[in-house]
Amino acid sequence: MNKIDILIRGGKVVSPESTVEAAIAIVGERIVAIGDEALMPPAAQVIDATGKYVIPGAIDSHVHFRTPGYEYKEDWHTGTGAAALGGVTTVFEMPNTNPPTGTVAAMEQKIGIASRDAHVDFGIYGLLAENNIDQLADLAAAGAASFKCFMGNTFGNLPAPTDGAMLEGFEILARLGLRCTVHAENASIMARRQGKLEAAGRVDPLAHLAARPAIAAMEAVSRATLFAEWTGARLHIAHKSSRDGLYFVRDAKRRGVDVTVETCPQYLLLTSEQMKTMHGLAKVNPPIREPGHDVALWEALHDGTVDMIATDHAPHTIEEKRRDTIWNCECGFPGVQTQMPLMLTQVNAGRMTLNDYVRWACVNPARAWGLYPHKGVLQVGADADIVLVDMALERDIRDESLFSKSKISPWHGWRTTAGPVLTMVRGRVVAKDGALVGDRGWGRSVKATQQMAPAAPRNLEHTTESITAWRP
Ligand code: NCD
Ligand code: ZN
Ligand code: ZN
View (cartoon, rainbow, N blue to C red):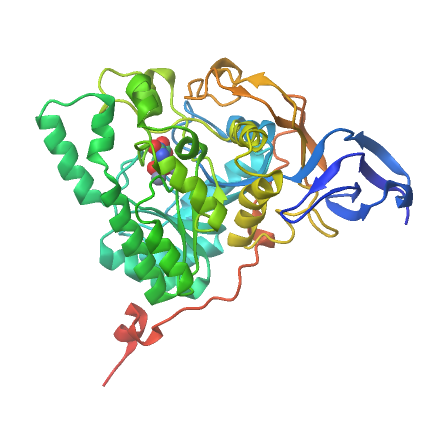
């Protein structure tokens, strides 16, 4: 073998199945060898990982980078910079920007912005809405790596599509074979309850939870899985927050429905007890729930019902998070930079192994979006998306040191006992020792290499397209 570009030596390489001491050889953007250091050819650059663990970069299936439209909350430099600093090498970005990413023009605009500014690789979500069902195929061709359907109201106030439009959208996505992510909360239940709560004068933090009970999420999860089963569309349940409804997912998976589920650190580590004291700070959709749901979500990760950890990185300004009543506070908070240190701290606390973490943060999202095996795994031929992890790195999370424009998060003051110390995206170091070192624009869309499993549409004779084409 000729001289290689980079050799990462001395570290322990982690997969879901194994942790082995090995060196990794990189040429250009790819891993070309993994094994005994003594067998590796000379390298132009050597990265010493002694005492560290070497894991695939995390893939975050759920971030909001706000641009275009809400640049004051976040842009692609600050959002993907935070990702790089947090050990996240690929993000999937949500369409509730302004304009929403529901037209080919909006998709092209966002891909242009992201390509110019991103530090990490990205997939762009196209919007599935009432009035753009006829454009879904064009959106996919224009670069949508996945789709997002807001079944319930949240930031951006994008109206939920009717069931008729959603079903027709699923018919089309089933043919395309792409995955559709749903914000699964029932819009009308929440609107009615919020109206009654406001009329009754409730403005306390728990009123937000009262407006969005688990039944609203359960109903939407069951409806979305039913539509996915009928049409053969691939489904992803965003930000699973409650134990209720997990049985719908278990049952759907058992029947062979291609449904994946994410949960987030806030649902694993916080409960409504913290919401009482944090006021609008911990306001998020779906809400953080009563104690007990957190325990069930951990169990669901361990038994495979929940597939992955995402962040729902949802930046807002300090002012927007600290308004007078809970109804006026914006929902969500930043998380893409803090997910890995928080979850690795849970590894040290014994709630999972580092192998589990790699399965939930790297491998499973790569599989769900057709990026496996060039991403999510450290093996020959894969992209060199690599993170060096120090399992003894003690830090306090501080709002002011977040790279996001949103300098306010519920994690302020949390002590973490582990974290990423180096992040590499396709063979280039993008962050090191807490500083961003790469250039904007290195990140690129995953669409070109995305390979979803063959589409498996069902009930084709009943699709809107078939019934309207049919003649007696
Ligand atoms: C998200 C946002 O601000 O864009 N907010 C949130 O509370 N989760 C929207 C969303 O994911 O529902
Ligand atoms: Zn959502
Ligand atoms: Zn979100």
